[in-house]
Image 1: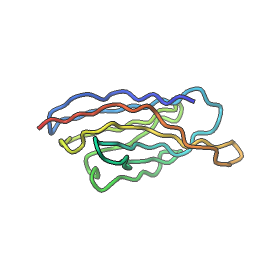
Image 2: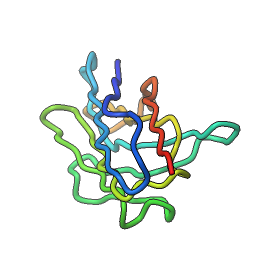
Image 3: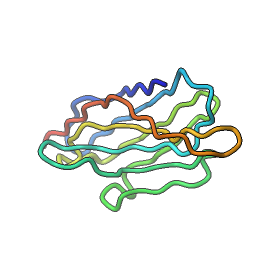
Length: 121
């Protein structure tokens, strides 16, 4: 299984970026997908996640109202639209995907390699 993130970069405070994460190489069912981030010297933290059908999403308080998670299940792709970016959003952003059998048994969570987001003031 491969998760490949893209869309990171360097932006000024107040700017926007859109991250993408595409899953390939699996025949298992992809359930929830999400985004985490890790800033230098800090632990990885939850940013947002979205259910398999895209009907429900959850956000960290620090990004509510600024970030929007979405997915295209047919493309096994999850997105993170990030608006009103702040310097404290600077981090490596990782996506993940929960893999299940088609009989509903959880297998494992797969992670991408991360994409750097840098927000300057």
